[in-house]
Image 1: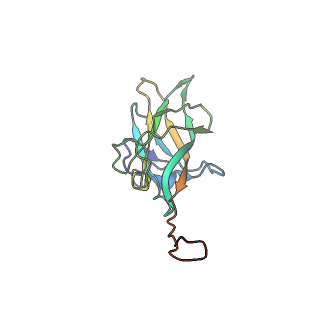
Image 2: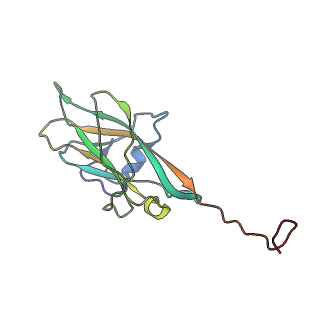
Image 3: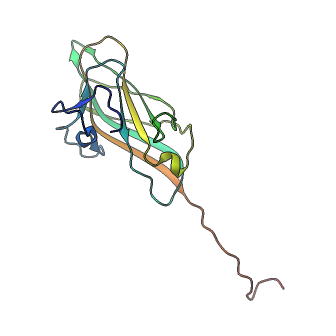
Length: 169
């Protein structure tokens, strides 16, 4: 994690929260998580560097396994998510509204790419997840995160042969 606001892990720890958020939503265990009870609170989770053949991001899918808690339907609410360059200030995706629920559920979001799409911009990018500003009670939990980035590969360089049976002259 790059920046955590007031988020803590399942043991109220404040360091290395990324260790408590599962990578991938396919088989989450829901035993560890990051949680906050504050309004307008954000956590930035750092993504891995892009593979060597990454040329340009073409689309992105963000999957979040989350839960909102509270009493009598007065839940603390998630509000939004967005992907930023590794400086955590330059947005490279549109903001997306996070829809939560009182049960642990995996949601998928498809934000548009809105900033640079190159390898430099996406390597070490940060996913920001924020809670709302309403004065609600309860907590917001993040159990697992998966960011799928579809990309085009670097174009190949082909050299022309200077001689051969079909070469001019």
